[in-house]
Image (tube, rainbow, N blue to C red; front, side, top):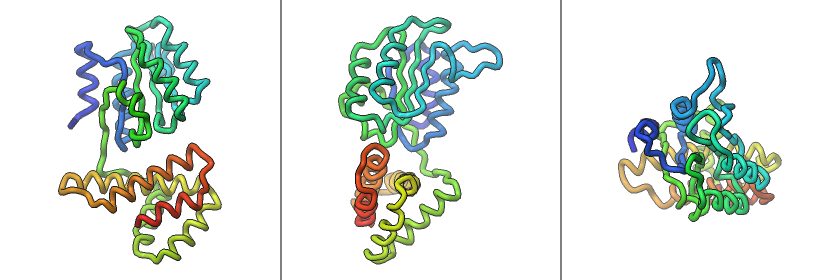
Length: 243
């Protein structure tokens, strides 16, 4: 889809909105911009008010746990107060636990006529198949991901490690594993660069299995470090073995 933002706005203008959307892809800022434009169209707002605190909008900016899903259920059960819809936006949906996804699925299986859901997830594959089946997937991909200075340095480190010996790679994993948050930042920058490269190669030819495996393992390790107590060093080594 060349212009997913325009697609959503056109659906709203024609009053042909689906009840639940999955905004997938690596272009996070594009997704947020598209949502804010759409909310300004769907939700009447007072002068100088902030659209993301509208009475008929619940914007969950972190992956919700079970308790937050119950809050979502309650919000979805209420009648809109100032607009045609009750709208629920869930960022970082890819980090939801299996239990939270199952609880959210039950809500989506019996959607209210005046409720709209928007889930933002990357990688979307971390959402369960039953949950994804209830969502209309709108993809936002970018082959040019802008990184901050720290992320850019991590991305360059990946290139150097690819040429290094296995002993050097494992020494790197041991050093960085002392701080899981640092590893998460590193893997996030690697993931964005690898995904951009994968999209670019896909346009030109079929990406190599090596690139695909490296991207999958990077995504896996990033997800596990954010959501479980996996051994940080082993998670990093698992990725570095794929270089």
